[in-house]
Length: 368
Length: 229
Image (tube, each protein chain N blue to C red):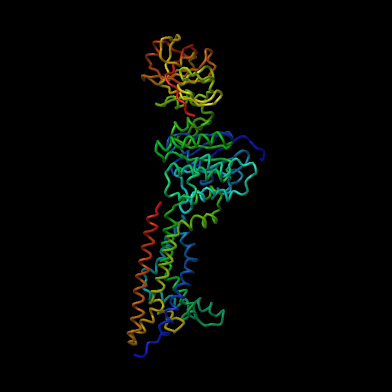
């Protein structure tokens, strides 16, 4: 099993007290995979098992390297697994300076390969912690501490980075300050990251792949952009449901200061100059910002009015609102969006799956 | 009452300090693994071990001394060990005093170190493991430095307690000048023989020493307390 497989294969099963966990899923060897679910769904336990900090029977194989295989009685101890782990609280070593913290794992990871993208200066630069190196971690802010703990994990030259709700102990402001650094990690490192979170906002912003968990079981796993519009999953029905769409800057309108994004099945317009033509961004459309018309409305202030096709409509009982999934493009071959409309409007327009409509999107947010 | 004899004063002081240093060093070597095990083990019977370690806190020194006398004497294991190098007994020797002191002062060293190991919990060791540190490596590079205040308190208390012991020493050491006649015994002796000046000097010195030790311990505690998390 030495060939470089492109997959991470995970399976753990067991009971802890009166909580039972039984999960099996695979993740790609690149990008950010979010383990997403409510508190108590077992996501942190899964992460600890991946790190070998906790032991449940099963297997964990990272790109062909077997770290655990209970069937064969194989269990690599934590300190022999080339992984990085970022805990919920930064957990910096209080008795060491920031620099010594950063180098703790680096010293023990052995010689760096010549072509090392993760060298000390690059990481310090990436995380913006150069001015803190000689300080003691005691006096730093929560955001600074967490950035250092990410740097410390990266400098141990991991093959995989495990992050356990790294932002949940931080306040809103600090989160906003730190997220861009995480996005830079994602862009500049070819390192698979497993990211545990119960915050859909973080997941939407960062994740490429999602593993949806509830009560110790996997509900679904796959690309985020697919799962978010799957009518069978609870994501669509969530009160703050939204979809992420990958867009590329196609054109800048200098007269009105607008950016045109090419997305699958159409073009979305966003206010302001949002990057050079060709730049890849991630857009977010809230389900409550989408409405439908049967004809293309000309007398509206809404800029984004795209032909689309209804994919599915569903509601539970006699609720006031229904969840609609529509695919962009006149032929419905584009990206899917979700909409929340009233049951009354659905009846008035006789909306049904397969129907051609125009989707009016009141606002599009840029999240990455 | 004769002339003030300085050697008579100096000999017990030197002997006491020697005993305290050797005892403290041994206590750190023996007590640290015990403290580590008590702090980290999940064994159900570990509190029984903790109780045995703590027994000298409540036992009258004479009880401890009595059993030590049996253990160290010619018919106990101590006698057997002494036989290895041609002596008859470990009782009434400096070596015997060291063994007695180590047992007697053990709780004063083990308890603060155990508390310090428990105070920082599992997390720093888990972090160390995810950063490739083996358990042995993590013990030295993380656990010991983080527990430093506990080590300092333990060493100071162990040292001071050894200097102040009397009952156990009287039982197993007797009163042999230069061998087992430590400070506390010497003071007792001076008082018995009405050498008040000598008794004053040694007793007063002990008061000053004790004050300094307790003050130092408290100030250390405060300093580390303020450094905090």
